[in-house]
Length: 526
Image (cartoon, rainbow, N blue to C red; front, side, top):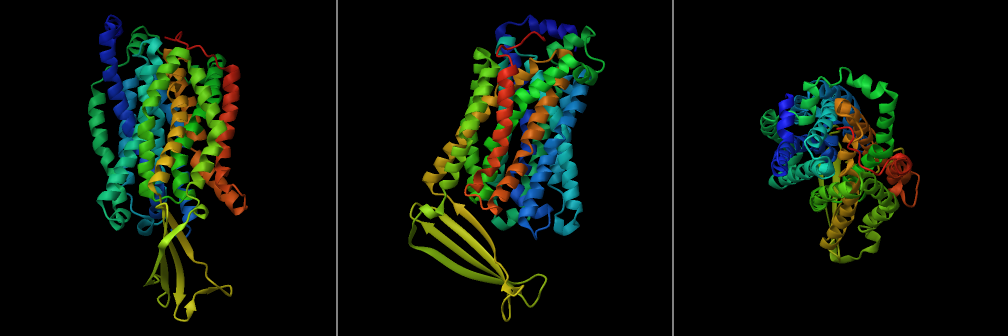
């Protein structure tokens, strides 16, 4: 923790430095990956959680409430950035993200322990919301610490490359969350998964957190911060220096509106909104969506490192602005192609491809009524299989009447994709992941280089987490609302309405970034 640590690091050969930074990246990445995993299993299981923690009488409202709870974790991330960023600049990077790791891990584990809405009523969503807020606060302090820690070990001319490894952890965390959920679904029966199996991915996280804590505990402080602390050059009031100083605050705003907010919406469009769109708009079977997303993410993840490396060569701005531009221009054609790939109007029903059966059970609340479910399966010539369940109330005298008319059936539909369509959708999601890697791969190095060591943790964390937590985190809920509103209004392309949010935010960010950001990488603050 003294200046000797900085001097010993500076005296190392390049080979020794590379070996040291690999150990730093491994320790930082493992913890960050686990925190992202913890954060994402909630989003990945949003459809299931909507039925567990919210009233079941209005599925659409329950799903939107789940997305809003998910978004709440993002909205508080800037507050976590301020609180933990301040601690990181006062006492050090290492100890701060040890605390964030533990808060995240225990919050995730406890979400898996909360009784359902049927058991404890409105306390269920209240407890979930509280734990989501704790997760958001912890993640707000985690990323800035990990990115700053790695950047302060990296050689300046390779900072984009080394910090890009941290950037892979967010996607890797989502990938692992999808794999764990997929394995759990395949291992258990649908009934067991729906009853209790959905809790397993939340419980598993506590084991991973324990391993990561042991590894992180043995890490040393970053050499640049150790030197600054030994020389008495650390900040006594990081918040005041970061946001009370007009010169520095100008760079905080530029980092937010010229880079982070555009990066945030592109990140969540290419991963979370793509997943939500497949599930809720296209009605693709959940297990297929998980596998499809995991495949696209696995193929795209190496490009985080590639574009981080490229930003060392041609500049952070050139890479990030190009990613925003191509995303803005191609999102609507991509999502239009995704939707039309499962358009049943363009498919032919196979010979003897329609099967139908009915089941009935007594209504839970009305003993004289039955719930009749009509199970219908339609097989198309290209291998697409549609499963459609229609549930109606049936009394001893016939269908239950409401306002003089038979009560409308509740219909649910899932689509099992053909192999050709599945791989086509993998390709379209993969393209979106490439956009993500272009804007996200260089962003850690870009933000670190904008601010001096003494207030770096605080200054870089806030724009990053507002850009990702607020602008990005609100995307699933806002986009779902726009799609629902567009469908009710009868728009011909209602399924594309949700894209106006990320396109608009990214366009504003692109314009500001092109005008005000410098393309030259800045290493002066070291």
